[in-house]
Amino acid sequence: MPLHILVVEDHALLAKNLADGLELHGHTADFAGNGELGLKLALENHYDLMILDLGLPGIDGLEVCRRLRNQMTRRMPVLMLTARDALHDKLSGFDSGADDYLVKPFALAELLARCTVLARRHTLNEEHTLAIGSLRIDRQAQAVTRGGQAVKLNPVGYQILLALAEAHPRVITRSELTRKLWHDTPPDSDALRTHLYQLRRSLDKPFGSAMLLTVHGVGFKLDAGA
Image (tube, rainbow, N blue to C red; front, side, top):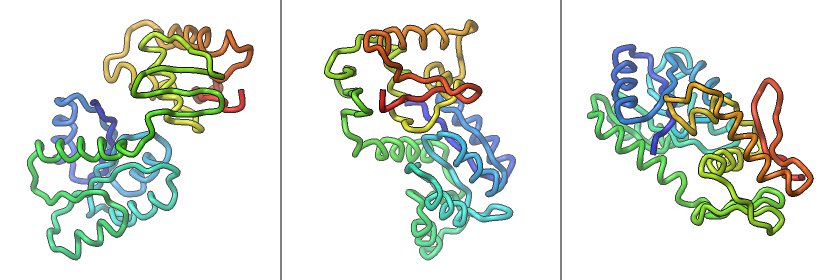
């Protein structure tokens, strides 16, 4: 499963190597070279995982992680990187809210494996069925109903609706939707507009009220009250 990862690392060469390795294995990443920017990006965007260096300029990785846990409304896995391998350093990392700990130097294969495990573990306790107002999405069966009535969607429409439902109640941006659907190879035409139109015809038109809302200049969201 391709992941969208935030890497907070001030060592330029390591950051470049991580970028190359993540891209080679189908993942996408944003990068920050200090704790302030890393925290800002994490709070403003949706990432599947954060790779966080402990020894950052400004606020260090421990403080970034603490602030993240205090300010973020959802749980995002954090893999902490450090050159410190003493037990008390690892315990400090876990105490700040980190989910895993990797000591430098490390093999890229191990980092990738840990990222996959963290992302998978994060979804293990999720219910199969998402409920938003009268909308029900069965992720296991990939079936959708609204008010007890089946909603037939094509595969792309289902993925758009699932992304919106998993993000609810926040707004999901056009670029985030595009990345989730097509990763780093979006189609040349404005295919998203076409798929959103088709989704609205299936999700909203038969019911006389709109669940799929456009937040102008920002993106899209679902209205639970519709």
